[in-house]
Image (cartoon, rainbow, N blue to C red; front, side):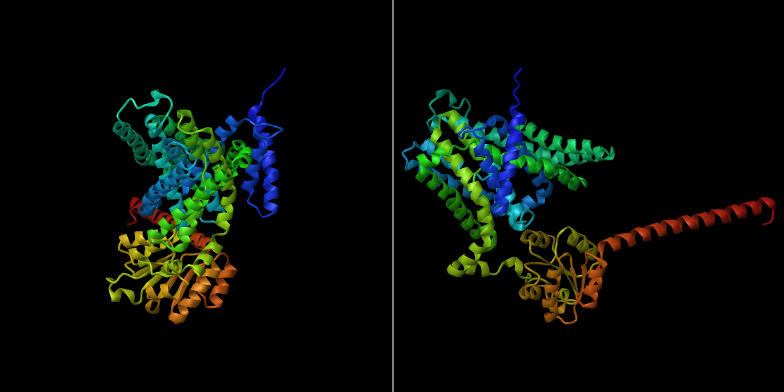
Length: 586
């Protein structure tokens, strides 16, 4: 009896080869994902030996994209998305348009019809979600301001790509499709209207209904105490909603999973959900890269090397430079421009979907699919090196390009204290450094007591949000004397550092005391020894969070115990008085 276990064999052999090559790549200081891509090529139909199931690998890759986007949504709130909308929305639209034009012009030089040129250009314009997130995670930039801009940019690209995927079939006949039946049966404006209605209908449903329903459901599951049921709930929300969004609203799996995670962020169990789904996200992201490798035909490198190089030039240099200049045009600093351009200098899953649809509709030749896959494989493999060289590129540009030096050195309006601030407010005030979760809690308590506060934070969007709330804030590094001067540190009474990096805090206080020798400081510490050392060295008054929690618990317990003791004493005295009255003694 013969058995076929294509799923098991593809997973077993694919994982094994990916593990071996990933280990080798890490040992030679090359990103592991290069090894995963090579593993996919080894088990692909175009190379000798074992051949994995491409269809199964493709579906497993989609699950990886869903889980990864769900995890991003858990850490990316709607507020974060709205904060970067001023650059993400116009930037993504312009970048996709310009990249499409570059790809179309290149393919037109190969004598392709214009319809095929446009589809090919669209395939080169959209970046890979998985690769971008892996790159940001490797540099610990995912939750930074630059990372938020890159992720927001990609979310807008995903929405645009969804619209393109829906609009391409009715437009195919106009673009030279060989099948007349692909012509639109409905007016184009009606198709566009329904497409927009479906996309924004899904988003509205998730933000209005899902934002309340999903956290409530997760809370009910958590009350059961069953870990496996909780993990199953996370999978249901991530994969089930993504599938439902694709089936009902015709949006992408990635976009559906992203908004599922984003509304789940409102639950206090979101951190646990992220931890429970992490092993699955890692495993399926490996399958994604293996699946990409399986679709690659190395023969294209020999048959058309110049075409491949031209495609790579558009993906890495063309898209990267377009994003770079667009970010600078929106008056963001040089490091933000470099981070965003490195993030988008690759293509991935949406490119494959677009190319496959183009072939199905007859508006993209098979050569186009091969070139898209070649560009994706090589750009994904090179993307980690783009991130790794970001600091070098920034230093090189500043050294050899006077314009870039001016851009990097120009004064950001958010780094200056507004002119309309009352001078009396900036005397004897508190300077709060850091506006993260901890800093926001401290700020709320200070404002409740009507204290004068100036916030310093490196996240530009945080500063913009604070100023919208009429809170004085300055954007920049707190160790920079110019930033401290803008916060009027010379007239401040106290510095509160809502950051837990001792080296950073020491550097800040060293600069602050040069400007104000009498300034007092408060900061958190990791251990009792660290707190004592900071106090002895006159750096800052320091508190250990665990100790504060223990003291708060003991204080609450004593208050509760004291109340119970008092209630018991009053009850006892009341009973004695009642007995005395009954005896007639009173």
